[in-house]
Length: 142
Image 1 (cartoon, rainbow, N blue to C red):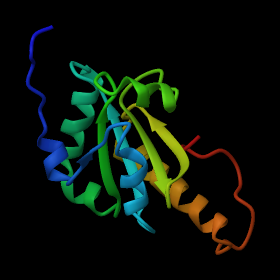
Image 2 (cartoon, rainbow, N blue to C red; image 1 turned 120 degrees about the horizontal axis):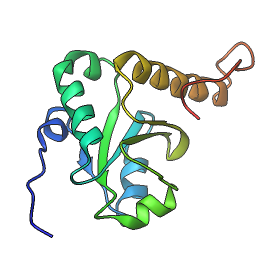
Image 3 (cartoon, rainbow, N blue to C red; image 1 turned 180 degrees about the vertical axis):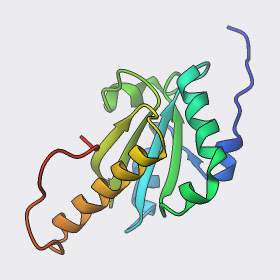
């Protein structure tokens, strides 16, 4: 397989730390109380490149989400793909204090990604006992 350069512009723009199977748990623990997100992607993944370009087209809106960003090439780190039962990329998993909250699969626009982030934050609020009631309905984060 030829060495194809990876466009890492989005990784740098959003200060995404690269993860491997050996580093993921400690890195997520370091995020502490921040809402963490892992962007799982793959080399030569057309939809991954579309997602990165869309994020770069609206950097302030992405930064305004207040996320601690991580990324991993699951074609290189296949054990992570198995661990999280990934069937496709791009996929984003949300974590709080190392606990998996849910995921967003595919890039379906900023609005849907913002809704997935809001759903993850609501799960944190409910788990912390800060929400007034029970979560209702289906959310963009499964």
